[in-house]
Structures are given as structure tokens and as C-alpha cells.
Length: 589
Image (cartoon, rainbow, N blue to C red; front, side, top):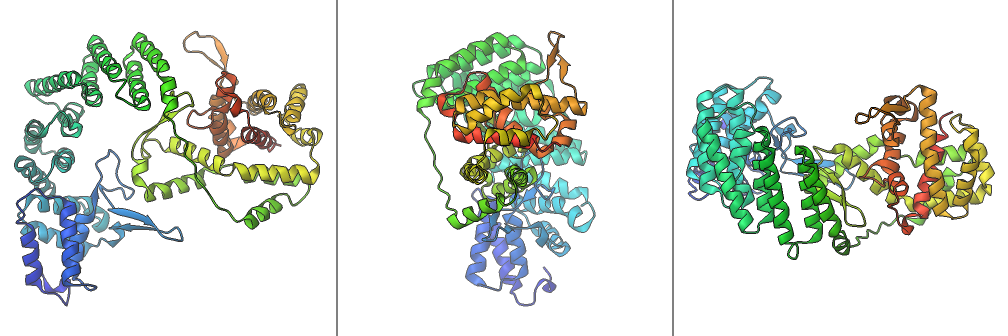
């Protein structure tokens, strides 16, 4: 190392410390190395450590991103943590903004001097990942070769636990493809298969199955027939052991991989056999498994049936799910959150909204309570940085009867679904404020049905032959008859969207692909129409989908029209939102 890295530090002591770190004989993770460096800095240097030690600490602080997509930086690595400060500012460590060409040069020198494969793998991976972004030039292909060779040594000699090694094998394989190194690709194939033999244990689901994921599902790779058959034979033997051991989750994990394999070979009978075994083992364990988890498990199997065209088996599973619906319902718990807002702020907000004449006030109220997609997206990005784990796992959405009605994927795979859920949460949170605003509106203007009808009918999409229905619906709403109000007004909202579609030249009907008959487009379909989004705005169309048609949202139109709602659903909160939807439609002038 060179003196110009820092003016006040003892090179020999730091070198001795780093060399000592590399002599660790037991399994070692990057996190452990990071903590050891941090402890050394605190012990020896207090507030003014040498820059090189901070660069070492940074090197092992970065977290490796092993999902298909890259980090927000467009890189493989991402921060160890991200926190929100009091004013809402986001702080991340380590940050890509801190990396300089000088730091990368230091990592290159460390790569040359280091002998431990865990250290060499980390330095080479960092150099490969950040060089082009920081320096504007790609690293030499030999850097990737060093990383691959280091990972092979780590796997063969068990320098790390399998949780750290398996993702490294995936990364090494991808780099071998990038540099088109066939020799190292073939080495990795053998290493991956051998490593699964060494570490795979039935009761540790993440310790096996990766040979199939990395090798047989890889479209860029073709392996020898005998190696392919070994991978499948091992999976099938493991599946049978897990079935006999009544391990429903392990059996599903292995069964999913086997089904995928046979789907590629178009052996549907084999897939049906696997799914049937998974259903049977689930009901063998019904007394030992929470009903919510079991319902979720079975719903996943119905998706497999859809994927593979097993309609009869899917119907059979759905019937079984209905039978456990009541048990699921009994397991639900109520979660309450308390939010404190100063009364003065609420009063001031409402007073500002109802300032002006009736037409002006109605427009202000309408616009103020429309969720803005971009703001919700920013809110979502902030929340996902504060609690990243919550947004990294899939979530099942159940109705009150215990049926799984939708799945919310991880944020990076299902951002639209998360936006819908956050809009729903925001709507619930401010429902009291909308009610307070409407109360003030009604009181100030002594609002009645005729006032509202006169205002709505300034919009051309409100047609005369629906006026009597709208009068009855709004009258019911003002008189707190929410059963009549919702049953009358929700179909009118749908009809008004159709009126809008007709006026702007969007299709009202389409050809049914099965019967080849003409049928009306659904409300959800209309709300996704490009022309309607331009006229009504994307924000209002998304809002209506959350309110009326999306199973991840309130889905009020479908629940009421299909007779799924119960008496408690015909409430003031839902009625306020439907009334607000009518006001939104009246903005079209």
C-alpha cells in the first residue's frame, strides 16, 4: 500500500490486521468481516481512522442483490441499510456516491495481495460492478475470472455457509456467460451439482433445489443428459421423502420444481400426480396447520392447475378451500392504528375547502380527495426503504370469509399492486376527514338532492333517462339509507363511464374469445382504456379501480353486484366514496 492514501496512519499495523483477518479458519461471512473492521476502527482510531480502513469497511458493508433485477443504482450491490431522518431525508450506507476511482484502485491492489477466496471474491465483485459506473470503462475480463475461481474455492472448501455460497454460484455463472468462458462454465456446472450433494438437507428448503434453478431452468445453458437426470432423480427422491415425512412446505417446494420440469416435457399426467399428492398431504395435516396458511397453500396449487390446464383438479381443490373458509375466518385478528392530528389543523383544512360558492366548493372537495398516483408512488418508495423486508415478500389478501382473493407480490415485481394497496390504506385513513368535509358542506349550503342533481347535470355524460335513478340514489344517501344508495348509485357510476366512452369514441363492446358473441366491456376494462384515461385522467381511473373493481382494493362494485357484501359493508364510508365518484365524473364538462 502507498503512503499517499493517508498522511496519519501506521501502514504496518493495518496490513498486519488485514492479514490476520485472512487467517480465519472457520466459515466467515462478509458481515462478520465488516463488523471486525468496524470494531478495530473503534478500538484503535476513535474518530479519525485511516481512509483505507473506511474503504475496507465499505467493501464488506455492501449487500449483494440476488434478485433478477438490479438495485436502484443499476448495480448488483446495494446499501447495507437505508434510514429516514426526522425531516424525511433518506440516508443510505454505504452509498454509491461515496465510491471514487481512488477507492476502486485500492480494491484492485487488495485483490492482488489478498489470498483468502472470500476476500478475493468480494474485491473482484465490487470492481466488476462499479468500475464502469464510476470510471466510465469496463474492467478487464480477468476480474470476473478471479471472482469465479474464488467462488469455486469457497464452495469446494466450505469457506462460507450455504446461504452465502448459493447466491455466489448464481453470480459466478452469470459472469461466466458474460465473458463467454466455457471452461469455467463447465467447472461451475460440476461444482453446483456437487455442492448441492454436500449441503442439501430435506428440512432446510434453501439448501437444495438450486441445481435445478441454476442449471435446468437456465435458457442459456445446455448440460449433459446424465447430469440432468441426476438433478431430477435427486429431486424426485427428496419429494417422496418429504411426502412421507408430512412436510407440506418442503414437498411443495420440490414438487413445484419437478412439475416445471415435466411441463417442459409436456407430461401432464406426471404433473397431476404431483399436485394430487400435495393436496392429499395438506389435508392429512389440517389439524396441525393454521387454516389461513392451508388456504394460501391450496390457492397456490389452483394456480398451478391453471398453469398446466388441469381444470377438473382445480375445481376439486376450490371445493376443498370452501370447506375450510369458516376456520380461516375464525383465525383473523383485528389490528388498530391510532393517528393523532391536531383538531385545529382539521378544522382549518375543512374551512378552506368549503370557502366559496357551491360549485367552487364541490370542485375543490372533489379534487382534494382524488388519490394522486405519483404522490402515492413516492410514499411507497419511502416506506419500502424504511421497512424493506415488508416489501420483499409476497402477501395473500383474504376476504372476510377466509378466501384468498388476490396475491400481492414483492414490490419489485408488483409495484402496481402495492400502489393499489397503499391508495386503499390512505382512503381508509382519511375517511373520517372526507365525512367531516361532507358534513360541513351539507350544513353550509343546506344541501339537498336537487342541488346535487343540478350540479351533476352540468356535465354532458349525465343523461336524462337516468335522472330518476340518480335522484333516488342521492336521496337515499342524504337520508343515510346506504343499502339503497349503494345498490342504486354504483351501477349508475358504471353507466356514466360507458356514456363517457361513447362520447369520446371508445368501444363499448368487444368480441368474446370463447363464444365469439358481442359483449359489453367490463367497468375494469373501460377504466384501463387509454382514451378514457386521457379524458378522465389516470389518477381518477386508478382511484375508481381501487374503489370498484380491483380485488387488491375495495372492489365494491363486484362485491355488491355479486351478492358478496354483508350488511356491515353498506356503511357511511363506502357511500361517501361512491358519492365522491359521482362528483369526479361531473368534472368532465
